[in-house]
Amino acid sequence: MDTCLFCQIANQERPGKMVYEDEQAVAFEDINPKAPIHILIVPRQHLATILDATQADDRLLGHLLLVANRIAKQIGIAERGFRLVINCNSEGGQAVYHLHLHLLGGRPLSWHPA
Ligand code: AMP
Ligand code: ZN
Image 1 (cartoon, rainbow, N blue to C red):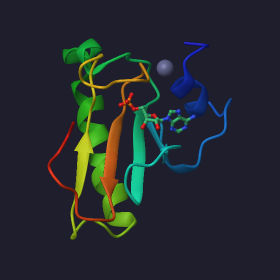
Image 2: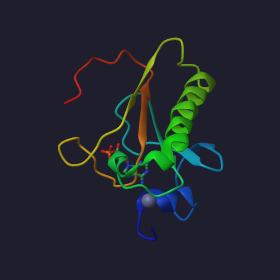
Image 3: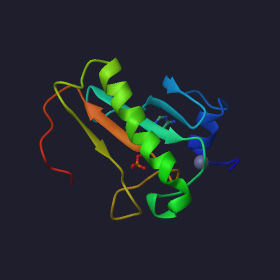
Image 4: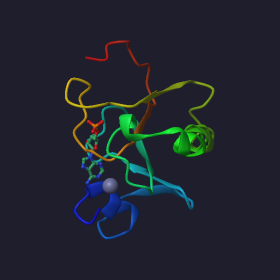
């Protein structure tokens, strides 16, 4: 997807503060962080929403969760705790239509998703 913001960041056609890269996924800092740690974990493959994932993507989805684990440990927030969020479609608050996991942490997070 030539015009997709997160495809462009993943392909280094747009700047992003990368914290992790591998063959299947990239992770970069959110431009408008909602917590001291706010990292987006993004598959290189363009899937608009989590609803677009199929059985063929099961390994990729698992991989994204393991990347989150790895980053949380690497940046030292694993023991304290963190949150992973996927927003889907309009009432889910999705603004960028390329699947991504939000990794949030660095302070106590209240359970107030709205
Ligand atoms: P969502 O609402 O789940 O689609 O989340 C989209 C996220 O992308 C928001 O937290 C934005 O702050 C973030 N975002 C938008 N543009 C950029 C960008 N150029 N670089 C990094 N993060 C971005
Ligand atoms: Zn994309």
